[in-house]
Image 1 (cartoon, helix red, strand yellow):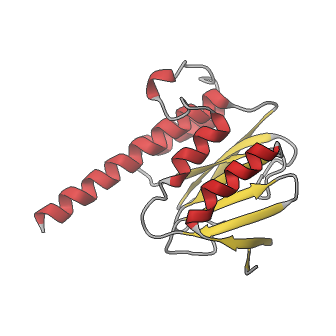
Image 2: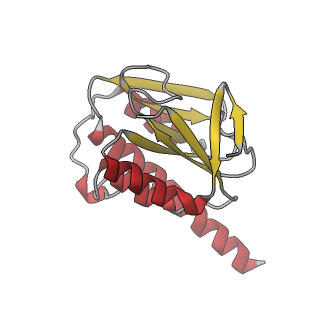
Amino acid sequence: MATVEHGGVRFARITLEDCLPLAQRLQAAGGGWHSHVLSPGCRHNPFPDHYAVVIEDDSAAIAHIAEGTQAFPEVDKALVKMLHGDDILDASALTGAGGDCALLHQLQDVQAQGVAWHHHMHFPDCVFNPHPGDWSIAVETPSGAFSEAFPAEPVDVLRAVEVLYFGNLAARESEARESGARE
């Protein structure tokens, strides 16, 4: 199996088409796993101009990576629902819980400034986790990163972050379509 190393992590290379079946096999086997989408330019992404999808097999300590394209990999929406529930991307499921979260306050400032950002949800054993052993969420901007650790899975905070992120993604895709239609 081909590998790629980046940022101190050795990844086993797979294709985008392999991501969902791999996650389904890991979930069916009952082992720990989680996934990430790495945006172009993300410090964890060995493919600077493309998205990438990472599937971490926590039980075997193997990180798989699939190089994508310049388009957001739609498989991520299925993966995030498998991990965090069908309503994780649903704005109507926002409860306001986690409102005292420092990360959300900082993210709202970034959002208000119109700064590009992306995020990572880190399981306790995640190879990218800035707070090993804890759940954490990290946000990256062009000027740096910030994160917060949590003692348990922060589903309400993650939902708020995901709703903002996918709202931004939809707006960017809409702008790109409108721009293309004008040309």
